[in-house]
Length: 266
Image (tube, rainbow, N blue to C red; front, side):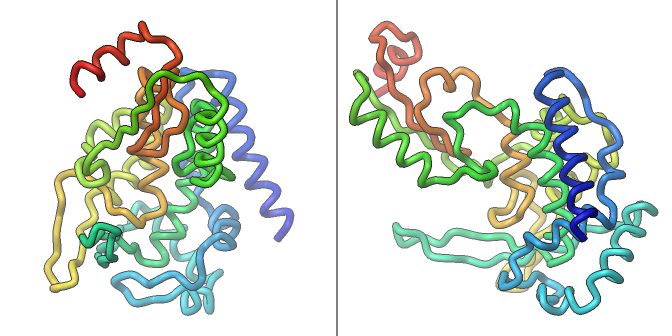
């Protein structure tokens, strides 16, 4: 088992090193990395107590025949017979009294999404600045809050603005996302997997199946990682902390053109 894990980590490090050293390189043969070794290694990080999807197969049930299930999944991938299952929609309360819709994939889809997530992280992680805290490995929201506290307490800033892209998860354009991913990925079967998850219908609580034309369900493993391919370079030099659709910006310079435009709108 350890040898299998080492081989997976070595492959991912090789991708990350090439992504960092060759910024315009487009990766191929990623689809072939979704093999039994990768999926077995990813299974260790699957939340075993997570809610099940539309097939009502829990992680504990899937694990009872793990090797057989993974072998069957890999054969489906090789034969291009894999089909993404519907995503089960569930609603949780928000702080303002409204409900936040979550999308819960089937256990097997979660496993495959986790493998794709690892590959995407290896490719895109070198591109991100230290001010980005959204859905990155070994970095979390509390790290961003700590940095923000220190910077604002001891830094010399004239203005601070908190920005939020309203409905970011709901309105993401599928075609633009895939085009952005294709800037670094030259592997149609791999991108087609992501396209299948974007287009997978959602089974709502009333039994209706919804096929959204835009957006991606909150709750899926690969969704936030894929969206990290969408960056806003203009904000990065001024950003203290950014997390997916939110950013906290601050200016030391009163002559910053973006600062002037924001002040005119505010």
